[in-house]
Length: 426
Image 1 (cartoon, one colour):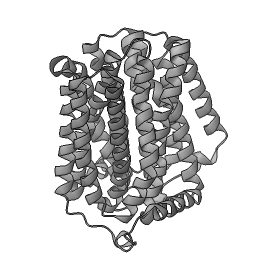
Image 2 (cartoon, helix red, strand yellow; image 1 turned 60 degrees about the vertical axis):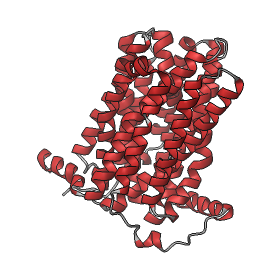
Image 3 (cartoon, one colour; image 1 turned 90 degrees about the vertical axis):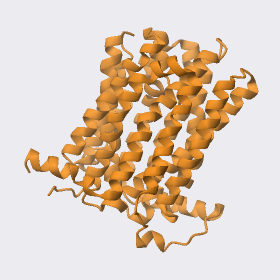
Image 4 (cartoon, one colour; image 1 turned 180 degrees about the vertical axis):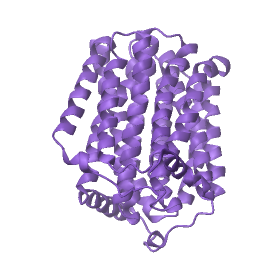
């Protein structure tokens, strides 16, 4: 295959009417999502008492993690039973409401235990809704594109999101300076609104294997469906190896580099608030470069090896990110973190989509999405240790542990490198 033909094949999903709408709504939402996360972190950091501010910053991640773990598996069951288009519209509409409420709490800024409790409660609810949206959105892509174009579509999804992300990250500090924390957070509701409009314009109808499932989904039915999802995942050893590696990478690496990354940059590296966006946007740049490369060469079949390579790049970059506490290392580390995470996530998603049947795809993708729940939940113990040991002492230790775990998991699982898809290109 020539580079030119690979490039054309990589852009082929854009000819699909429904995929263009799905991609457009997703890209706009992803452009504003980092602004939402950074605004929450910096608002808590700015308003919390000095002796517990790091713990409360970590509680944002813990709230998201619990929400993801509680709602995530149930969301996968919903995605396998109901019209995925309708489910996306409902979750994004509800996310508009939670965003407005959180912005209002930021504006009122009660500074009381009750005020912070409400803030974290709606953060938990928002994460729960997003954990329903994520496996549904991932499960609908093969429905829209079919198996041949799914790898290219997944890569284009990430490329579009990562192209938009640096813009939001670059402007995040400046936006907060101009409109305040509440105004910046309220602005992110436009991303959810765009997603609702774009998804509503899709002509999508469920495939027959999904339309034929029973519709009632009570608690016992949900539990049965979740068990079936785990059974399907276990029946595909390559899928389980990939999920295990990504969960390990994210559980140890994401809390420090993403959830507590802005805190590290502002308090340890010493970057001023208005310039934070210039530094954190390098994560998005690295992610975009990786996503663009994956979209350009969608015929790569050795996806297991790509997952391992992405995890190793992420782990090494994590070590660079926290080494020597200077801005150069932070920027270089951020570039590698964004690229490594994108390579691992996109390759994992493509592999899972190819190996798992459509009727169970939502549930298996929700199991895969538990990596984010574990990552968010781990933020609290990391912060508690950081409050005790200090961040400059703890973060390099966590980076070293992450690298050792990822190297060990890839070295002792040679079959991971053999995990492949049937993508052979045009």
